[in-house]
Length: 353
Image 1 (cartoon, helix red, strand yellow):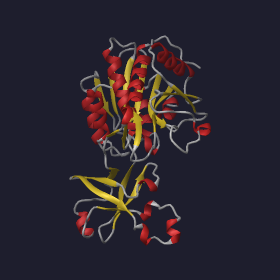
Image 2 (cartoon, helix red, strand yellow):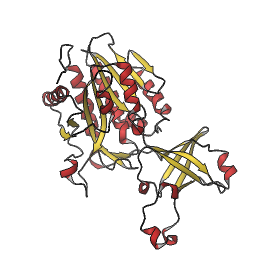
Image 3 (cartoon, one colour):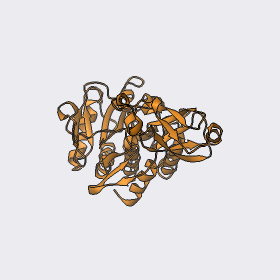
Image 4 (cartoon, helix red, strand yellow):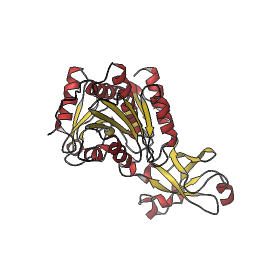
């Protein structure tokens, strides 16, 4: 991964985008695409779509969701402590003791999520996993009026957004799910476009609201009406303690992108992805799903009269936590794989299974 591409990934990761509050990251996406795409559109749902070579008969869509899980301000009590609802799927254990940012109308506001100290917990309370309603955000307010002077009901909240490099070209950050997937589709779009005339009309979508129901992929795919589409997301790396590989598969960081097989994936798309990996010497890992996947691929496949769909994932440790961890090499190879897939297309392909 070259320095400019890495810098762009860091910028994505350090820009807030809880579901329904994706506007800051979509501005970043539009700026990025302005130097690459022929045209850029944004729909009323919030999706941002770039296109290259739009007149070609074969329409190919690359989709990565830009939204992350987050919190939303629900209530401010008399002492100025803030209660929240979840945006997306949270393990409350991840929240205890975390540093957070409330994204207010006047800018980012730091806070901490807390519960009463272990010394003061009863024996029964120590045995119970805390519920979100038992936690609160402390921003240092003196009372409700002080908190309300800076925070409104409905303001969104994220973990503190920070990129942390690790050994062996690994990196940890909040919202690798799915900002690394978004980076992959944007970078694949750039690489495929830079390699010469395209064999298809190439669309790239930064989709919204995946974490609350795959919503943006459904609306953006309907608008594009592609014949073939690939969703890029993260998937669980199983190369850490306590995960059962028999039930979850054998997926490791650093061994390349994950190509999914199963009923949600068109077999011709899968075959062409694997062929592209072989011809370009890109290492890949296989994963299986016997049902519709909980990713944008689910709704891409069933849009309009059906779309030949693939799912390519970046392995991710510790999903939906403050320390989601990926290999930067895996991300780079995933972008190469998608660019190669696009370059190998032609309008005469029959996608019928």
